[in-house]
Image (cartoon, rainbow, N blue to C red; front, side, top):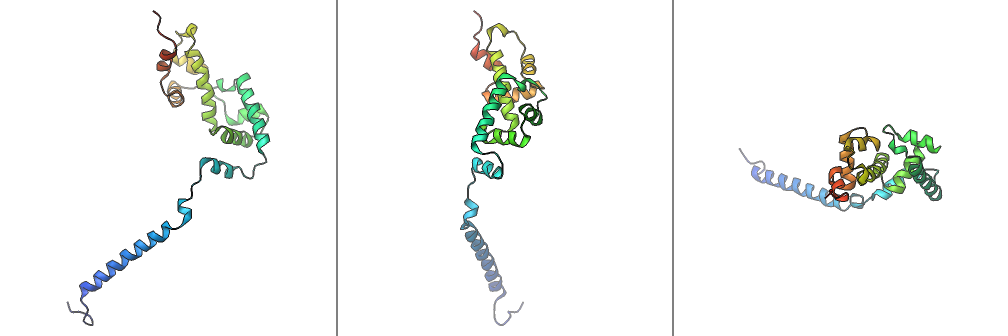
Length: 176
């Protein structure tokens, strides 16, 4: 091949590749200088933004949380395996959106984790009861509001860090 205007074709290729590399590095450098890339949005801020147009203020949210906790302790709606956000909101006579907001903002949990936490605590009480040491784990799971043994085991392990059997053995020593 002949050189165009006395320039070696290899030199043209080299200049092109170096130019591409410089452009890529420049884009990367300028991109990294954008503060939005490194802006952190903690979960709390994301939740607050989600509900920033809500009619619930902090005092109302706190009052609803107290009412929710009292209802969970007295009526034990979590024992119903078919409990939904809509049903719990109906029982409390508030909107689903308000209930969801209170659970998310005040407890840092979603509805299912909030309900499962109560179910796990109910199961733990039975598992720790010496008089019920012969109760089958599946029966305990169903009585606590779980619809399957698998869902119970997964939730229990997530919340307690051990299986129901391991928990039972750790709190109810074997008979001598």
